[in-house]
Image 1 (cartoon, one colour):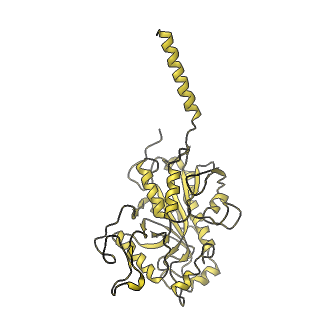
Image 2 (tube, rainbow, N blue to C red; image 1 turned 180 degrees about the vertical axis):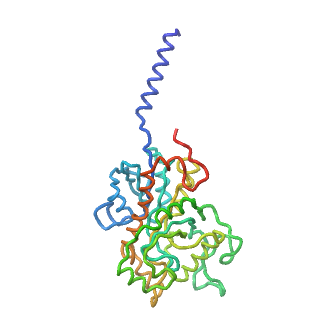
Length: 358
């Protein structure tokens, strides 16, 4: 083969490679992902769930079907995305994994903000309040015996796996049972939002008046506190005490139980795996839960009677908690988007810089 032929073949190879490269679109860079868990109906225009305010107010009009997940992802032109996981840890884990592996998106520098409603202990926070988590502990992995068969002296019939009695030492959390979030990032978000005014009302005051607890009577406020995540919807004073001890047990006394939710260990598990695959940054995750209801019964009511009133859309602080999730979460989203060059390549609260994009 002569020199001219070799040159011609090489040129054809380069042209073909360039054509293939040009045809393959580059992934869309995402700066912030808002993670919502449920929606009541449509994404816009009806009774809101956790997604609707973000879609309507932040103009998330670009719809990306996500057939391997629960619901389509939505974006605007500023790099803000919202995803709806569906309820429970299984839905959340599957949807976040589907999004994280989707080749259409570059999520390597994205900050993640779980923004949803929650039950909460009136000892720690009040209706309509917003709580940033440092610890998320799974409340599903365990042994359980029927409450009617609990031995004398046991505080609960719910035991850690591989233990023979409640809270037996030493604690031995299984993989995926305890998540220590980036504490510095959580404290940064808290300090950024702690003075954010949250709406109060006569209705909320009337509801709060029926509850005992150190924070039960307070107007809504922004706090730092920790979450027990469980697809099992538990309720009542005794379970509130269990959750507080469960948090202390699995965090070595560092966590302080404040809120309960149903999806976040599923979300965090997928993000942990995606971080191993260098698809996301595990140090860029925030969990914000806002209080739609207390996790136990009011004065003069049994746990069963109180549980009968616990339905999505009918929680005593439902709309205020949705408003708080957007109001507080949006302060952080806006800060990140407005000053993106400052945050893109340096992770807040982490000791190491984030590798820049090639």
